[in-house]
Image: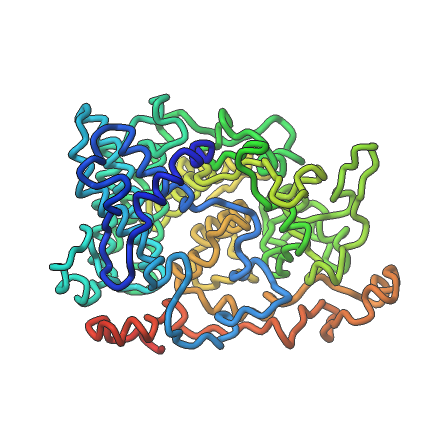
Length: 562
């Protein structure tokens, strides 16, 4: 989809570059493409909408540094409890002029697309794209700020009452988001429509609807907002439509020890059965820097995440006779879920496959470079050609079928409808890829080391499966928010690594580990002076910036606790 960007970026600069902060208007420059001559045909609609595709949430494998899955060597001001109310919020989904730009631009489109002289059904296909993106952008705003103004048209100099109006409640805004999603699903082009290959189709809209509705339904339940059933049902129904379409399946080649890892280092995801939508990258046309980023600063998995892997018999390590302990990584990986060695670098993993046939293989965990000793290798390619700065051509998922299966399993469990049939066509389909033991509801036993001790065992195990299968894809912090589980950020094991016993330490060169700190049980401490995390419940939302409250007192009250 990025191959067409060069054609529209210049036009959009002319088209949209005249917007000014002080009047909050969407005006076109009079000496360039003008509103009266635009939105006349299909090409105009397509060209305008293309600008939003770069905002799609791409799964990068290393995008969960703010969760309990990863530990950082650098200090995260927000997670350390040191974030203060800013004057302005320049984040992409923040409360700034640029942070609201995409919503303004979508609204501008939705008020004008009907001018195009074209087939009505085709016109609605593009309107569905606009509503899809508005739902996505508003969901991002709600996750960050909770209550926000719902604005569904572009503003003019007579729109003062709207511009300086109050925020609408979280639930009211999300009901409007659901209406946009429903419109998108009903009106988007069919997935089989080759004219819309690489664009928003009905299947992509269903995938987003399932994702957002699961988040909202569980957020309403665990944050005690009420009225969660509608969203849980919508999540399950959307996911089920995708499942029943028969167009998707779990990628596997019959190589259970490699298929999960290999799924994320492919240069072409078109035709992959697990791909609902992906961002494509092409040599010398559109490339990225992910592999180099991973190799420059290795994402370090936490001890808590690593412990969450079941043994290959499907039993938690605390209860399994197969578990060998964690004195060394070699022991810790024995008889574990086969995804263990496809997510965590273990002995024999090749960091580099050189053109001359030599390999840089792992023996001991690479500490202190990997601050916990557990190096995450998802989305990392050992091909040196992928390491050149901004030269990687590996495709990246936006919507992956495994997520849809996990959404369906969780939504059905939350609705009290997850029987063995549901588990067999979701969780067990995912496990089949790697040769992992099936989940059998009647044999599940509560893990005494569960991070959700009060949760029913089935829901607990579905959450575990989600944590493993989707690690690094960018979902975990949002999951903690919707489950009201932010306190897991405080988990002491979040900043603990592997055991570095005296015997293991002796295997490293002295200068490599001399400054690595361990606790009384020899677990690595991850730079404890700078990696502290302190959760406060006010952190479920970000604060409204002070400048915005000054400009518009109707946005008060400030989010709780700030």
